[in-house]
Length: 207
Image (cartoon, rainbow, N blue to C red):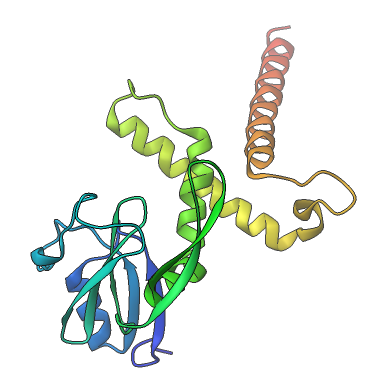
């Protein structure tokens, strides 16, 4: 079954999003919402702001056809493209530097994005536990980053298949870091057993 024309809602981060993609998806009956970089082609330049231009909780928007571009200031300006009405206002809880929580006014699109954009943001948060060393060349860093993404996706499936183990019912919760440690241990153990078997076979043949 085709997903076109089904009015699905797709939430994404700025790595994937662009004005051209938002318009393309809408033409095929798919609604999209996500943060966006200001250097993308066809991004409205009049919407660009600096920290000095806006106070926390302030927002502005520009509409281009069915796509709305919104800027909202938290600690710094955040830019989004969306199918939501930019005039609708909501609230989100944000943490201050001293650890306290504050309710901040925002466009409804920001509240919707916060509620629905859990997967990719959580992936970024978790994979930062295993940041590659800066002196590695970029191909090696990219390879290690992709491996970490694959491990996190595997951890999500593991949580679905074994929710009791991951949730920590009756024992300590099985975290992503625990999962990575177990995978690495299993790989090292498998390699060690393989080497021992090969050495044993070679010794038997030589004798």
